[in-house]
Image 1: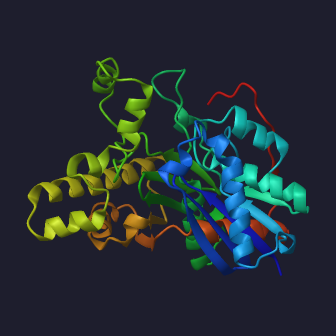
Image 2: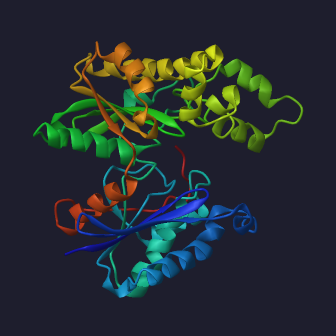
Image 3: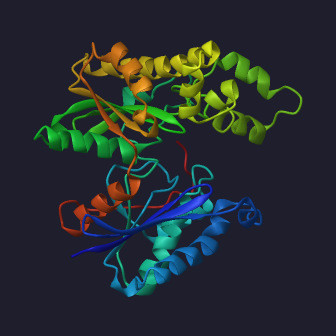
Length: 360
């Protein structure tokens, strides 16, 4: 039997779980208040604080660290990596501390895993990290040579959904072609073909979402950047945390929006329908690369619980392929299953090598 510790740091919480093989022993979300996080200027500085809380949570559940046979963490903003597992090593920790792609709470996960791995002699991995980038070169080209499209985003949940579909069809992951839309606080769409994510529309260029602005008119954005009071941090906050539904309707809760629609709020209906239509349009954008030969379109993430949204999208994209709905995003189970495949010899973990001068 394998006993795995799963670590999934988020902006205001650290989710942990312990699995015995495929079965969850316990799961806990350790909430971090703004006051607790205020002393830290950078995410990497939160490492010791979060690690101690993880250790305390394990102790409170009677789980000795020495009883673990593996640790799997959500992958942080590393340089571009391949799909699947990577051993957590010193190069990975160096990259996340010194040259990450960006500040992100998940960066501390591998740091915690590395410390516990060394102290207790437990193998540690990340799986399907945020920066998995296996896009075909033609799909990375933009109108400016210095800018390339990025395969950065919801790789963990979308690959898990695609592999689930393959299992249910009695096929190998490499033998299916599916478009997957992850619909959560951010929304991304990607194309799985030949065992890789060959195209990726991430949440900075794709549909707007409950809190992200998505793709925007570029000339107007450039103008806004030079307006009085604008700087890098304020603009990033605007498009990452204050866009989408919350900008239009003052809420990120789709249930609240649907309640307003049921009560006759035409403006709420217009915005919500526009978000769903944006998702459908971006799904359709992935189809030409495989000449429309798509086995299925998979809708996943928290918003996939909404029949209003899924019905809207289905009507507009089922001319491409059948639509299959996998609501939710069980990241903890997905990480555990990935770790189990490595420990059971079904997959081999990659080795990460640091890059002191990363460029996407």
